[in-house]
Amino acid sequence: MDENLANDLAELPALLDAVRASATDLLTGIDTRPVARAPKEVGLEELPEHGVGLRRALALFRERWEPGFSGSAGPRYLGFVTGGATPASVAGDWLTGVLDQNAMSGEDSTAVELEQQTVDWIGQLFGLDQHTGAFVSGATMSNFVGLAIAREWLGEQRGISVAQAGVGALGPVHVLSGTPHASIVKSLSMLGIGRDSVQLVPTLPGREAVDVAELGEALAALDGQPAIVVANAGTVNTVDFDDLRAIAALRQRYPFWLHVDGAFGAFAALSPEHAALVDGLGAADSVCVDLHKWLNVPYDAAVQFTRHRDLQLRVFLNSAAYLTAPTDTPDFGHLVPENSRRLRALAA
Image (tube, rainbow, N blue to C red):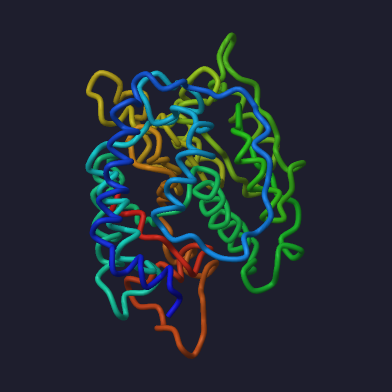
């Protein structure tokens, strides 16, 4: 065994105490830590010929890298809707690393059941009782998964499976939205639907919320062609909310998949004072919710929800002789892009 590794294992309790002490020191000063650091050239070094062991590596981190880290976990940091982390979530994240579970399959661990339970509870918070979901890395991947399922739904409306035939068989795709987040456009690019598929619908005067009447006219102009409508529960610039219930009501006249980007605004559902802002969220076909924002868990963590797990399974089915075939409750390896998955649910 490598000498450094042997020494680390022999001293493990003391080394973990040292990490705890370091973390305590950082958290104690987080309230006064600068929220941003001026760009400074640290300088990259050559790969060392030999390792130095955990104790020395921790000291080198504190000396060389930690001074340049921002106070993004503190209460004065207001960038990018970063929520910081609660003591419980920090502890959960630490245990996640210690236990090192791959939350892909439930064959050899209850980690998958823990994630299923956590997703179910989070869904109940948002009134998504008819939805199922999974943890993903962030809002971008949550939107990606939701739109991937929407793409399969579009194919179904046209008598094909995009998962089998490919996006080339799908034909023109119409994505309608008032103020889509950049991650929506990025996801459409990754999915082969393309950035040019986005049709911006006029918004209400002086606002970022879509004009529902204008949206209805845009859908009518498609002459019965199925579409994807991306609605916002909290726009990133002004925290404006689309009228979700009114948008959902348009499905009585026009065929479309309703995806709601509620990365941080969906949390209005938890406040009696603001819950009306997300009235109609449960009618969405897919929903994006980011947890390293208002739920205050460490990066990275988000959840995607959908009412159409059958289509989700069709998109992300992961067939191999050494993997369990999907059941009525498929493993997460059949529901999201990743096979290797951190157990994000434990921190949440």
